Amino acid sequence: MSGTHTSGGVVWLGSPAFPEAARSAVADTRLRTNLRKATGTIRDKRVAAAAELDDWEELRTAAAAIKRATLRHLDHHLLRLEESVTAVGGTVHWAADAAEANRIVTRLVRATGETEVVKVKSMATQEIGLNEALAAAGITAYETDLAELIVQLDDDRPSHILVPAIHRGRAEIREIFRERMGEWGKPAPEGLTDDPRQLAEAARSHLREKFLNTKVAVSGANFAAADTGTVAVVESEGNGRMCLTLPETLITVMGIEKVLPSFADLEVFLQLLPRSSTGERMNPYTSMWTGTVPGDGPRAFHLVLLDNGRTATLRDTVGRQTLGCIRCSACLNVCPVYERTGGHAYGSPYPGPIGAVLTPQLAGVERAASLPFASTLCGACYDACPVKIDIPEVLVHLRARAVDAARGGSLPTPESLAMKAAALTLATPRRLSFAQRAGALGSRLLARRGVLRRLPGPLHRWSDTRDTPAPPRETFRAWWRRTRPENQ
Ligand code: SF4
Image (cartoon, rainbow, N blue to C red; front, side, top):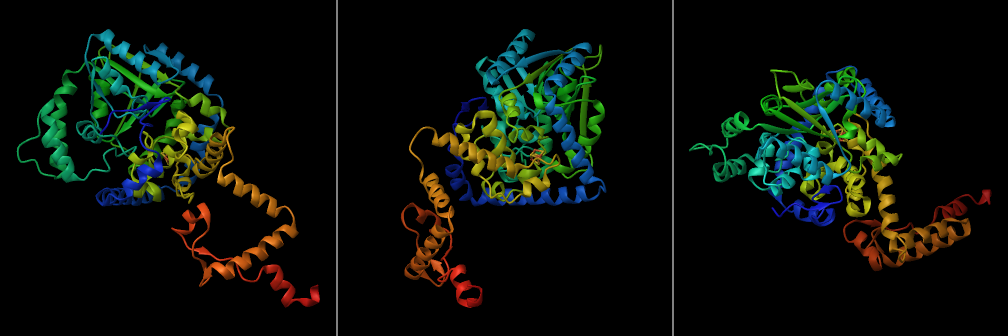
């Protein structure tokens, strides 16, 4: 895979725009098979896990309310979090953008004298391109989440929030392990098959030495409670637990929107998150830490609070609901577009419906203008979202912003001309009636079996791929006049 691109605060946007990237993705039948199988399985499990709770809808409503209220007073909760973390022995750093966050983490690692770090899967560090920034400073970051490890060994990019290697099948993973594991750490065992247990065991022994010897860890955070300064990471494999407890220094990079007012709020989110993401009642490992404790766990704890476009997102009264996302990936698994294109087509660490609304807001709509259009607006994402983010509403809102941004001061686009013509036509009944008669005439000339063969000019791009019903030969008004002469 080609090198990482950084555009604005979010990495990878140098990739082709969505329509182009999606075209090659949908032509990859193996990718589509892998995606269909994986998303279908997780989707069914999620529905069953949610159905077990009588108060599922109430939990969703509570989560949405907590997130909305927190975002309204985000500054207050963040200052409170800083106070609480400092009081329990941690150090809080504020990063306005990706470059500043990378500088802070690099400085902190350098201060330890170490040149290696182990990492727990973290979307925020992918967003800022931390691994690349550390590499440029001579520090190697080792991903320890199984899927992240696969992606890293393959010089690839994650394509799903929860299952970053969802685009790889088991046989492909075995080949990656056999070819690349020996480059650092323990190589893949002889005779490794594609049995999931064998693959997991190979990864476990490959990583063990890193866990035991590396003195610095970098993590993300799912939640942080402002009242106690407690930070929480939710994961399935136990690699997070190792990273969060064994090293001497722990550096956590967290988007500022992850703060919750109180520890008690976790009760709501820890019920919603595992059921929405893996379809489990409870995730296998929930690690929580509150500062540092002598003789137990890391001796130094640093919390880097990352803005990187979030404050700007907060200013948008429609778009700000996106910041309530808890990265469960339920919206990806139900999205018909994601299921066919996979995550790479979105050109960002945030794929699927949430990526289509989050990336343009974090990176700037003009840099990711095609993403809000990467949706059928079917609304499945809204139904699945545990925090009730109205993704279709934000998509439509961002489409308008993308169109406005593209228009700028330049010539009007064909689309805006068409909209102006429609507005002019619909302004008076006489104009509408004239347009309907013209349409009926055109229909007689161009239609075959009620379908227009090919629309003229650039409109042919519509009729080339869809049936375009011909306008009726008789308008409703004409039919009314003909059949109800008494009403004239
Ligand atoms: S937008 Fe909702 S469904 Fe999608 S990842 Fe975020 S919380 Fe989950």
